[in-house]
Structure formats: C-alpha cells, structure tokens
Image 1 (tube, chains in turn green, brown):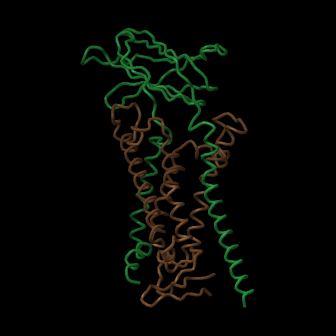
Image 2: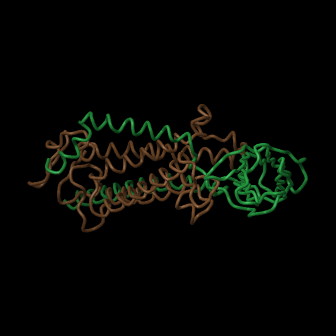
Length: 194
Length: 199
C-alpha cells in the first residue's frame, strides 16, 4: 500500500473531479476557436506592391479546400486600410480545363495587421493560376501567382502510414503466438523426456 | 481465482484497494487492452479516411472516415482530435505504474511527448484567444511547425507517441533478458522469478 495510497486517492476524491471537469469543459470550449489539425500556410508572395499596398500572401493549397491569407500593409506609416477595401481570389487551372472562378476574401484583424482570408476549392492536384485582386477607395490592382494544389497529409503514403499501427500490433500478436508455440514445444519435450 | 505468489515485502493484490491501484495491478492487462482498442479505433478512422480518398477515390470533402459519415461536424471540428489527445495523456499517466525497467522508460517517453503535444495545443489556443500569432504568421503556429512547415501536428504527434508506447508495451509483455516482469499484473508472457499472476 505504501506509495500507492497517495495517488490512489486521486480517484476517490470528489473535489478532484469537481476541479478537473470544468477545466476539461473549458479546454473544449477553446477548441472551436482554432484548428490545430492541419499544417500552417506557406508564404508565397512577400511585400509585393498592389496599388498603394504592400501585399504578402500565404497559402495552404490543399486539394479539396485551399486557404489563402492576404495581408495588406499601407505604404505610409500610420495610414489605415480603408474599410471599403475588398480582396478577391481568382483561380484557374494552368491547363485551362476550367474557367477562372472568383472568391471573395473575408477581412480579419490579426496581431495588429489587416488580413483577408479566402477558402478556395481545388478539385485536382495540379498547377493553378491565382489572381489576387484588391479594390479600395485608396486604389487597387492585382497580382498573379502560380500555386500547386497538393493532397492533404502525405498523399498516398497516408494509407501505409495509417496501416503501420495495425502492423505493429500484429507483430506483437505474432510474438505472442511464437512464444506460446515455443513454450508448448518445450513442455512437450519435457513430457517426452519423462 | 488468480494465483499470486509475490515475494514477501512486495505489494500484493489484496493490498491494492483503490481503483487506480487496481488499474496498475490486476486490471492492468484489461486496462491496456481497452486503451489499445481506443488507440487502434482512432487510427482506424484515419485509415478509413485515407482509404476513401486514395483507394475508393471519393472526393476529399466526402471522405470523412466512418464516424464522420454520420457526424460530419465531429471530423471537421477539433473536438474529436483533442479529446483523443486528452485521453492519450490520461491513459499514459494512469497506466504508467504498472510498467518498470525498460518498458517504463519507453512508456514515459511516450507520455512526455504527449505532454509536449498538449503544450503545443495550449500555445495554438492561446494565440487564437489573444488574437496575436507568433512569428508574424497569419494563423496560430506551433513550435514544431517552425522546423517542419507543412506538418500536420495531429498526425505527427500521434505517430511519435505511438512508437515508444508500443515499445513500452512490447518490453512490458516480453521483458528483456536480466529484467524481471512487472509485479502484480498479468501482462508479461515471460514468467520470471516473482511468480506473477497466471490466468
């Protein structure tokens, strides 16, 4: 009992449960705020001039739904991004198999910066041409970048990766079978010797 | 009834009365089996998703594993992933005392990696709540993602936690030469000098 009782009491003490349950509930409330599941976006355009703004673009170009983040910085310090500023993303496969589709980006304020976020459907793994179109009372313009849409995760290797835990457990099971067989052979040999 | 013959001076099952003690003694094997079923069920969900995408060639938004077919919100939200991460850290902590020697070292390595996983989660959540992302990123960013930019944290951590966890289980079931099996539980297949439980 020595050494076990102290920790064993953790499960018997209602106050412990009372304390931990709201903490877990609080953590779960936080979860709606951010997705930590996918990798962060990649910076593909840095301080590019579009009209009166210096523009940086991050993209998470996953097949399915890709995400663009466009950050605008006014050239003159202290100036603000006008509220009427809109950003659109136009995407089209480089192969030309689809017409360009445009998507409006949503304005956000993150870390004291104004940025625009847009979700863009990519239906296939290939090169896409993306046009960043900025309109505002202070001026506007556009920039074009090529982006390769890529499958989420490791692509087809995902199947192998997710099989690996089952192979590991299978290996453990195989060890048990081999051990049992070895032990069975050992006891049979002992019986024969008798 | 279970047959136990522990050397004098050691804790016997009769002494282990609390739920927690039992989980590390007579219920250790069953507990680990249940824990492993949960772990494999989680991997099976991911495998089903990958199978739907790359073998069945379903569109990615429609490839939601098995649970996600009935509860799409569950897969899209972070709740399921975080609940699993929480369950993992609880399981790794709760069952740790049933391990010893090399198996304990591997098991605890898995625990500490999972602990760091939670720190990363906390870091991401804090950035989202405070509204200030680290390193000028447009989205909340974790420490590991600084070195491996496009890594999926969930997959990355679950893999690097699973490997030492399995090694811990392996050495727990088959202790290396010169090491005695864990006292009190029935997990080890090698019957050592302690005369542990035989089912």
